[in-house]
Length: 337
Image 1 (cartoon, rainbow, N blue to C red):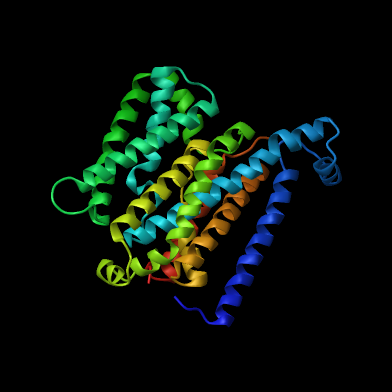
Image 2: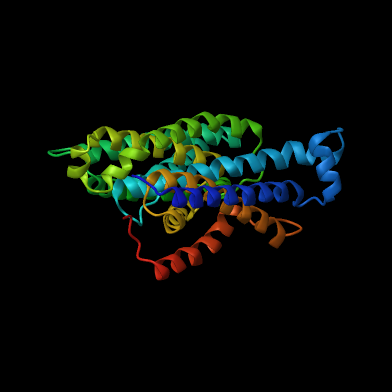
């Protein structure tokens, strides 16, 4: 898809501006928290850790939390843009193929039947649950005659989601201790995540992001329809399979690390398309920057509004994302092209 130089320049400058705002939010995230650390002290220990309590707070808690917000936000934004492009459904989000609920089911099994109680342990079981759920949706969508079209995959995802929700509800209702532990994960939070969680999910997010970038041109062709896409030389089945794999890696890793976080994957791609149009190369790039911007802003807002404690980021994104999405619905028809 050709873009006029002036339009490309505007989009590049817009992306640079968003990145600048994101950098500012990163600095705010390092400064603001439940423990009061002056700005000058935060800046000093950031570059010269001296073993003080302030240095420990900044380096052991706030830096990994900020980096995880960047990673999780970028993963969810990219996964949402991919899902909407693959299904040509503007209301699709990364949980549509059962990825999010599959991750939740993995955590339920880990807590209820295996006694896992660490955040890092949840990560691996959530990733496994997301992978199994995605594979099951694909097999159900491809069963019988015909191919695994977006419509069949969506129906299969809805069916599997209902089954997994019933299973999770049964386990949680029958065992109050499991429910009590699971509720801290399912609200969606960046608090308490350290470098071990960040490093555990990093390879999955990077792999999913690289696949998404490689599919950008093919997604532009698929946006014109399967027949036109084939005529332009796109391998439709292969593109959808790779796109589904990327969504699994991105959404599965993000959900595993921080729990389910609402609206980012649904609303952010609409903001990106509103700003740059339907070209998936730009939509993916903007989604990868705007989603962590919104997530980090929500995390900082939760710390400020909940002081001396904090409000979990999953709650804040739901509060902020709902009105934002409704405003987008009123301002512009939800279309991909």
